[in-house]
Amino acid sequence: MKMNYLIKTNARGDKRKKRITLIVVVVVFLSVIWASFFSGIFSSIGAWIWSGENSLSQSIRETAEFFKSKNTLLAENKELKDRLQTMTVDTLAVDITRQENKELKEILGRNENRSAVLASVLRTPPFSPYDTFVLDIGKDKDVQVGNYVFVGGTILVGEIVEVNPTSSKAQLFSSPGKISPVLVGTRSVSVEARGLGAGNFEIILPREIAIQKGDSIIMPDINSMLLGVVEEVDTDSAKTFQRVLFASPVNIQDVRWVTVVKSGSLR
Image (cartoon, rainbow, N blue to C red):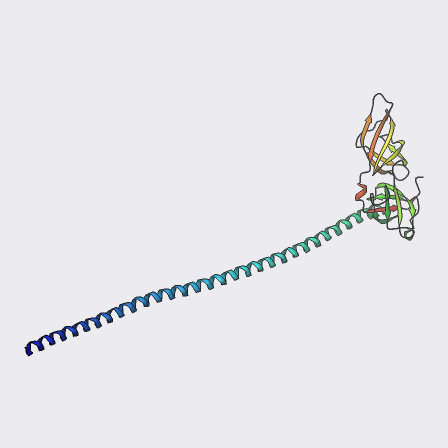
């Protein structure tokens, strides 16, 4: 009986050892497997986080560069616009100066044989009294009442009616109601023209005097200078007279320079 008890006890001890060994092996195996598994997961998570950080940093850098580049372009664009505006203003100033020089040369060239002085028009209608020019010359340039005023050196527009120390006033022949002697038609018939204002005139002629649109109207006794051009002829067969409307070939409001000719008066 004692022997059988020992055998059974030894058998149970062997089984226990085997179980313990198996448990240890399983635990070690699982430890290795779990360690490898979690290591891979943590590595993947770490790689993902690192990649995300790199992408975020790159996006931030790219965004900053974009706004920096945009601001730089805006600044350069503004600078180019400012330069272009400056160049445009400078070019315009040069063009204006060239045009003024050209006009002055033409005016002076046409008046070489006359006692004339150049004047700048300070005010024109409607900024001056109706149908008058205010000029920047007066007694300082020996301007006298009755001197003639020309535009472009050849187109008669008025005469000096007031002289001050450094300025003068010219009344236009087109002043409303002003009567001026003129020559019309191919035969240069002497008649009177009445001013209507703003460079416009009218003439009342006998029907038999031939005149048509485009004919020149000139002033006598001053080298036959041009006063205006016929724009309309109103002929009524039932009437013995015809009404002729003519106008100065220059726009009175646009005149900037005139020449004052120091000669006799028309009055």
